[in-house]
Image (cartoon, rainbow, N blue to C red; front, side, top):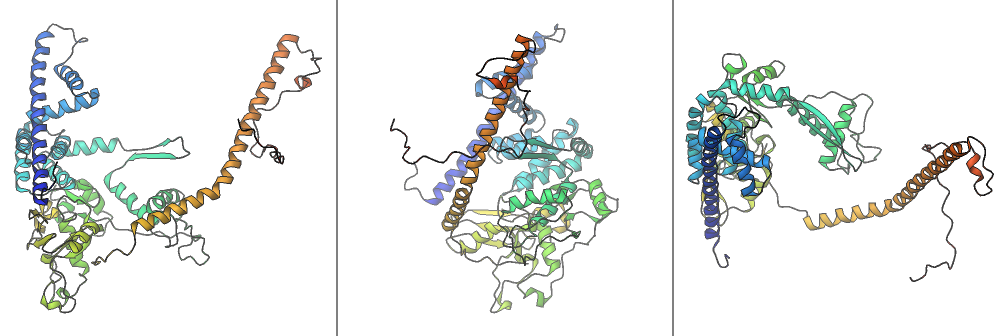
Length: 529
């Protein structure tokens, strides 16, 4: 379809399709909303004398038609009708942005979902606020939209935000569902501060073992949850006698850091401005004050960078903390990976041979990039790759290989205007992905081959145990039948003398094993048919 098309034209086609998709969805939602009002009017007119038990509302009628027309479940159709109604009555300005192709449908869905508890009388103000904010953005991510919506809701209708938090807090739970493969799945919902503490603790335990541990990070986090429930540290499986991470008898209690950003007025109770919790997002002032009661507080201000610090490659701890709190997420367009796990990158590269020549370590020349985008910027830059410019307030202007410009402003400055106005240098990959995958596959096959004999013997024992239980149950049923037919008189049949024996235990002990299989007879080959 696009044979011979230049990369610039292909990116243009992608952008046109993205806007066209938004316009089509807006058109569909407007049609669903109009259908809803038609069916609502019909239902109110037709059911004016209905006693109530047979009332089919306009919403139910519309959902049924949408479900049939779009070949989807009733629940999915009801969700679409509810979203169309919200756009038409509660968020008309945001709906217009969708119809113009300015914003995409996932962003609009986030706004609809996170404003459903706002008072209808305040929705016009919130709708205008979100529309104006989106128009100022050129690049955004899911996390940035969530932060902006939550902050706007808390500013315009704090009661709705509190109601949503109270409702969610009352629904906190932890449940375990068994699975058919010998595993179980853990489900739960926790308050944001508690969930962040659990996440930090699991990561800390998972990284406490030595480099010889053969488990993946995901497997170690799962094992760490079990160790945490037992009050024990995570044991390393390297089987080395001199392992530095071996388990001791008295586990030490470690403290860890959860970064929370809030104004001093909020912490001291003079303001209800929301704060930001690392790994979660916007939280309200009450949660900020709860965390502050037992936390170490640090005043966050833009540090004064001396000439010696500016010409040093590694930023100071104060500068690093400022940059991460200012950015909150990766500065690359659309990326919402947290800044606390990202690299701090020099926009103008640091001159190791002559630091005073440029690339200073200052707030206006450093920002957060996740490792993936740090590598892209470093190894796919230059005239034919990505080019970047950082503004004094921390905003980053990126130019793509096709010449398109994207402006990404710090997410922290959106939530805290006071913030408006370390570093691991990536190296070329030394490992080969294909060879690593082949090595992992070979190791997995060797382990399976080693376990094949054990698994075969275990299946034979399980099958023999099942057959033995079936035989005992059958013989006991025959003894019960004899008791019914002969009234307790013994059987004189020479063919099954065991029927006169006492009933057998139908529960086999755990140490029961069947007799070993007979040795194969030499030359006893199976027939070829």
